[in-house]
Image 1 (cartoon, rainbow over the protein chains, first blue to last red):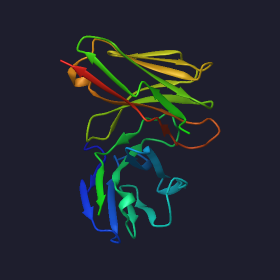
Image 2: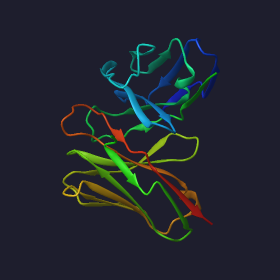
Image 3: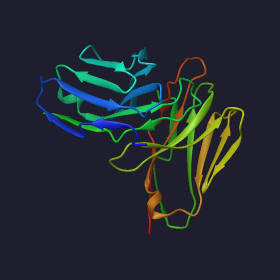
Image 4: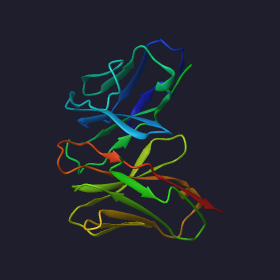
Length: 115
Length: 113
């Protein structure tokens, strides 16, 4: 199994530009999570999906952030317009089920730098 | 405030020694999980302990859970240089539904060869 796949691994963009991060969860997993990690705030859950449906987006910082999961094998996190304070490592994770008894498998992350 | 808070923030030991990291939380949980993160990589699940369990082992890892004190500890025995990483506890909150986990700020473990 290839594990959770994220692209790009690194993204450098200018303030005001649109950024799209992509994630392919592990086949057969039906829960998908987007996290953001910074030195100041640690690891924060942004949004999670179950069976392609957004369940909790209370962690999405503001309307500039949006996430979609059009099918079981693909999700995107979009930031438009991007700002320097969005610079962080963004992780996607997936798990087998909605219940918290399941472990989460993390992707390698996308390091985003907004100048 | 963080649901899970690790202690200490940083720990430096010699290879072969044991490393103990602690996690405290505030509200009732269904289970508690420990994850490891190597520098520049994603988190990797280590072990899950349910609220009705008190101790769990996996290889050189030993996790304990004390729900009365709302705390957990992760013990790594006979540490190796390759154990150098950040270690996070993650808790769910019993009142919420679904799979939301809250991660602590982590303990940075350095194992010197």
